[in-house]
Image (cartoon, rainbow, N blue to C red):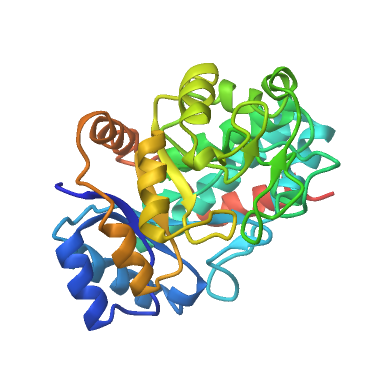
Length: 337
C-alpha cells in the first residue's frame, strides 16, 4: 500500500464527491469514524467499503474510538453498551484475576462488533492514570489510580482486541491523567518533575511499550519541554516516548484539530512529523483543514513505513472464535457490582 502519513475523518454517512476526489488523490493511510458517520451496520459497512474502494486498498485501516462508557461511537440500540474502564478497575479491585478476565473478554466482544463492520483498529486502551488533580476528560475512562491496575487491565484489553482481529491503540502517551485541562479545549501544562513523571504517569506506557500503536497527548510536560506539547515536541518523542518508555511501535498524533494546538493546520502537521510522530490524525472531516494537513504529509517511508507494516502484522487472523451470547452474559456477571 502506497499511503500518505495521514488518517482523516469524513463528514457524514457516505462520502461526498469532494471527499471521494480528495481521498483518491491523497490516499491517506486510514479513516476514522465518529457518531456522525454511523446510522446502521449496513450503512457503516458500505461507507468502509466505499472508502477502501476509493483509496484502492481493500484492507486500508479503519479506526474508531470504542472504549465503553462515555466514549463509544457504536451505541444502543444498534450495538450493545459497554461499561467505562473505571467499572473494570472496580472489578479488578474486588478480584484481580476476575477483573483481568472481564477486561479481556469485554475487549474481545468489542472486537467482534468492530470486525463484523470491517473496522480494524480501536483507539483503546487508555493507559492514563486517574489522578485527583486531573481533568475529568480522563476520569472514568481510566482503569484506576494505581500503576499495577492500569497496566494489567490495559494489557488485557489490548490482548482481547487482538484476539478478535482488531488492533489496539494505547493512549495518551506519555500520560494525560495529571493534566488539569481538557486538551480538546485548551493546552494543559504539567509542572511535575521528570523524576516523578517517570515514576508514575509514564510508567504504565513503559510497561506496555510492546503494543503495536500509541497515540500522543497534547500536553506540555514542562520538565521535558516547557514550550511544546508532546505531539510536537522532539524532546518528548525522542527522550521520553522512544527513549525512557522504549516505545518503537507506530506513533499516531491525537487529533490535530483539537484546541490545545495552535497555528495553521499545515504547520501543526509539519511540527508533529518533525517531532517524530509517524502518522498524523485529523478527525472533524472539514475539507479545508484536511487539504491543508495533507499538503504536509509525505508518503509513508523509512522507519514510519516499517512501524506501520509491523503494526498491521500484529492482527490475529484468523481470529479466535467466541460464542457472543454466552460471552456477553459472562461479561455482565463479572462486571456487576
